[in-house]
Image 1 (tube, rainbow, N blue to C red):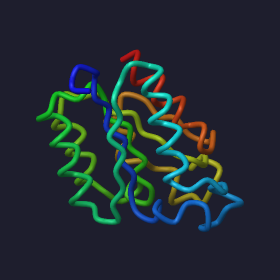
Image 2 (image 1 turned 180 degrees about the horizontal axis):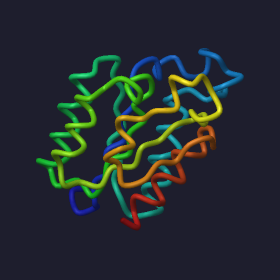
Image 3 (image 1 turned 135 degrees about the vertical axis):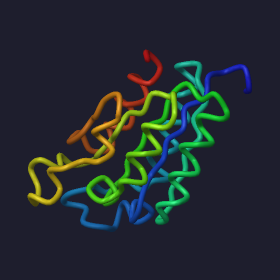
Image 4 (image 1 turned 90 degrees about the horizontal axis):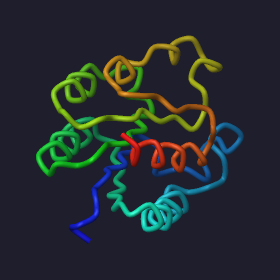
Amino acid sequence: MADRPLIYVLNGPNLNLLGTREPAIYGHDTLDDIAGRLEDQALELGVEVDVRQSNHEGHLVDWLHEAHARGAKAVIINPAAYTHTSVALLDAVKAISVPVIELHLSNPNQRESFRHHSFVGQAATATIAGFGPMGYALALQAAVWL
């Protein structure tokens, strides 16, 4: 599988609770459901996905650095709450040469005002938001074309 381009899919805090956490906002799919569909889609698109989740900011920073070091084709990141708070993630995205797609299940601009600002979005190549779990599929298609 090393011959297929690698795309990292990174997920931030509380996304391990998808399916049970505020389903009216985030839907009923679990992160495992989404990851399974992404792996199937990746096979069809001729790429490999590495799907990860952490509630710890430093892990996400390390994984962004790792994606760069491994020569990943792209990173899809749902930084969750770190979107609005993490200068560390902003700096990590700026520090790597790998294209980064910021992803959100909901549309942050339709939610509380503190969610309207994205540090990650300041450096991301693109942002996909508001499509629910389908946003991951859209982001993977976009990543293949970067």
